Image (tube, rainbow, N blue to C red):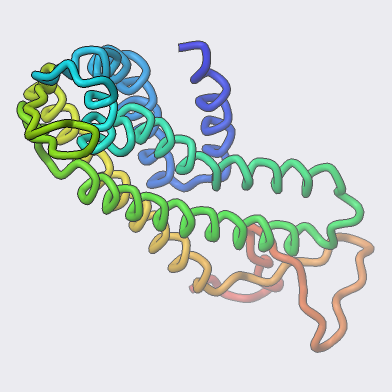
Length: 238
């Protein structure tokens, strides 16, 4: 699992900028995708081509039939899926590190926070698009059941050739599991996007000027503060 360590640490770096829903997505990604794919997926699909047996000795027939049955290896397709889903998070981490490296040149802290928020929303949208595209691709390429028998009529096979897939039931269960995890991941991403959009529309309290700091001129945007200005003296709390 050493090759997955860098990807896991990269995704873990995103959680400090993610809301609670985004952290649930991260848990699903790390546990039910990366961990399952690294520990179980390689064992399920490692003999996919070696155990693909056809009832012919015609040279070149078996590779052609295997290519017709599986245009893309299941395992490589799922690994590519994980890599593409992690790409928006990687770009966001790079952007956040770049913004943190120029504290005096990136404008007021409120502007930098808005840029980070907008970039993070864009990464979530890209993640949703990739998730839906791969779910559709999985359904079109493989369907939802691995057939134990594949009938091949491609050249250079001299006639109809029957080819047999190893452990079709186990692979079918794994494909179903991975598709359900993909649906859950897509729903969590949609919920996170809805949460971020709703939060961006909430009115923000104006920033209180610090002691000795000049108040902004009329029409000039003020910074953003987590705490609203305290009420003036003598005002009654409502």
